[in-house]
Length: 548
Image 1 (spheres, rainbow, N blue to C red):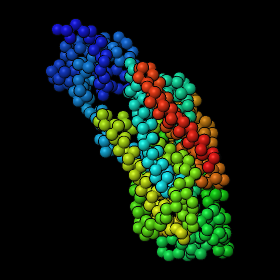
Image 2 (cartoon, rainbow, N blue to C red):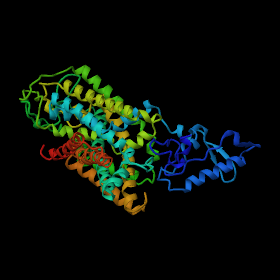
Image 3 (cartoon, rainbow, N blue to C red):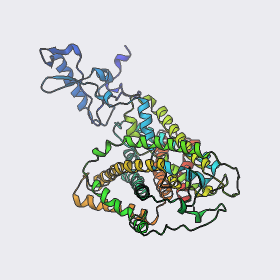
């Protein structure tokens, strides 16, 4: 009897409402009990059900859809599998698994996150470990994995900290706008653009590299050109090269390598140059693709990313088996062919790892498709564990199997595939595969940049041919300039990672969490101290890139 005296519209207070059946920013669907369906050949609604419909409409008019306090009580709305949608024409249609069809089991969600994070950064992990030192590099990789996981967890939970509002279709920029106004939203969008444009620049540099080496392999194979005499590297069937021996700090001979002197080869090298001509050739291929109104065609090739990563893991395993391990431990001082275990260049690795573990700008969207929302934190943690293990596996095997002291560990390139000659068939397959995959992903990244920029500035995803043309010229021009004058993907990745990570990984998630706790009166000094430390860490990560 005591329960009967409680206000009906206040029954939502104090417990978490069920929102599984909600359409984004819409009203709840109307439910019709099966017994109220009049079976006369068509599913029509009885008079009793019509009265119930009017009652639901009354609830809906009490307040706006964003205010959950006066939403229809949960006892009126059944489970999703029993929902009927009421039509004004007097017909009821049963919803056939609309919500369930778009939901994925945990294993699919985990590998979707893994596949999304597995990008170009994996090629620079061995170089980053070399810059930090083998032991320190492993420690930093594990620590950065935990830190970025926690910050990603804070992003995922950020929408839950907003009371009395329907945040079911919110993204992290919307959360930033709620707490910081338009400044917060624009800040998150700008740094998200930094990560996307940085990835596109890295893609252009890598595609120039892969196209160059692929063409070189085909030319040398057709004309029977042997480059082994013109590349500084190891002897034997499993060759490893040092493309820039002048930078070798391990005491090996410093030499300048020149072409073979053959006139036809000299002409080919002139027109097939990694930095002078290849970046320009790519314009003919990729610039028209950027002007497509939709990227749906290229989305069909996203599975190639998984295949590429799996092939790279197999390639690394094969090379490690054939080359064996070459390790010596010198804690602070270098020796011939080896680097110290602890080096002051470690911020270069932290910058790379910030981008390598970066998924914070889309984690809310990815997790919405998880069938079991209560397992979101577990699935996110498992996905980060898989990503971290993949990076550790590739980084450790490449570093450990690099043949020292014959070649110094300092010869490890920002793109570890550059340490294998263009005549290597296994590496040729990897480069060809990655080239095709990046050719399909690049227009999708351009589409994401266009949608976010144009929709915010002009209010339309495609405001006009001229606007899109100018934006694409800026994007492509930045890629061409970097590929020509500074084709170091390791440095590009670490700078873009540190910049976008400052806002989206460390600062904004920490500030949002502390403000939410303070508004609820639950902020304590250990939490404030820890999250302030994360902010300082993000600032130090960015500042450190300029001194390395």
